[in-house]
Image (cartoon, rainbow over the protein chains, first blue to last red):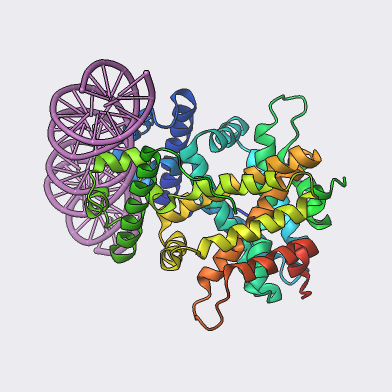
Length: 206
Length: 206
DNA sequence: TCAAAACTGAGAGTCACTGTCAATACGCAA
DNA sequence: TTGCGTATTGACAGTGACTCTCAGTTTTGA
C-alpha cells in the first residue's frame, strides 16, 4: 500500500489537526451519540474553534471519515503500479491489501468507527456515499481497462464494492468476539462467492 | 402489484397531503435546486404550513421519496403471494414488475425524480439509504427462505438490489432520448449479467 | 349531538453550516 | 535576524433545517 508523505510543515499540521478532530469526534459520538454531540463540543475537546472544524471538514459527519479520500487515492496508486496485469486479480489483491490497512495503526479507533458507521444513521448515510465512490471508481476502471458496456461496468462496480461492504457489514454484526473473524477473512469469502456467482445462495447451494 | 387502499378519511387525507407536498417539492427542486428551496417555500406552494411539512416528512429530502416505504411493502406482499415457489424466479419477476410501476401514473414526475436522485447530492444520499433498505430486505428474505449464511445473504442482497440500482443509474445517464431504453429493459440486461456472473465484464468477454 | 382524540398553524429555541473580518503565525528573502 | 506577504485562526453574525410546545379547530365514534 503506497502512502505519500505530506511535504510542507503546513500540510503536516493540517493532517494532524484533522486527525485530532477526528479522534475527538469519534470518541464523543461513541460516548454520547451523534445527535447529542455538537460541533462546538468536538472542536473544544480538541482545543480548536468551530470555525476550524468547518475549515477541515465540510460536514459534521465527515470528521469520522477523515482519511477516506486518501484511501481511494492510495488504491488508485496501487492499481497504477500494477500496470497492464490482468484486471480482476490485480483489483482483487489491491482491495484485499486495502482492507488490511483498515485495522492497522489504531485498531480501537478503527473498530469504533465501523461500529458507528453501522449504528448511527447519519454516519451510515455518509458511509454509503463513500461506498458509492468505490463503485464508481471501479466502474470507471472497468470501462477504461476492458471497454465494458456502461451497464456491465456499473454492475461490476456495485458488486465488487459490495463484496467489500458486505464483509464489513457482517463483521460489524457478528456480536461475539469468539466467532468474529478479521475483515480480510470475510472479504476473501465474499470474493469467492462473487466469482462463483452471487446468486448461488438463492438456490440453496453451498 | 398489490396496493392496499387506505381505510379512513384521515388516512386518505394524509396520503393526499403527502402527495401534494411531494409534487410541490419535486417541482421546486427542479426549478431552482435543492439548496435554494426552503421548506417554507415547499409548504406554502402547496398551501400548508412548515409545521405540517415536518409532520408528514421527517426531513426535507424525504418529500421526494414520499412513496418509497409503501413500495417496499407492496414488494413484500407480492413475494408473500408467490408462496413457496423457487425464490430467484419469483424475486426476479417481482422486481421487474416493481420497476414497471415506477413510470406509471405520472411519468413526468417519475422522470424528474430520477433526474434529481442522481443530480442533487442531498437526494442522492437519501436515495442510497432507500437502496440499502432493499438490500437488507432481500438479504433477510434469502436468509429466511434458503437459510443462507449471513455473508452470502448480504452479498446477494447487495448484488440484486445493485442490479436495480445500476439499471436506474445507467438509464439516468443515457443522455439522448434516442438510445434511451426503459428501466425495465436495462433491468432485464442487469439480471442476465448477474446470472452469468457479474465479473464477466472484467475479463473482456461479452 | 357531544366528548375524546387527532390535526393544524404559530412561535420560540437549538444547532449545522456559511461568510466576513481582524489578529496572529508562519515561510521566505534580504 | 528582520521584515514582508500569505496562510491560518477565532470571533461574530446570519440563514435555514428541525424540534417542541401550545392553543384553536376538525374529525371520529358513541
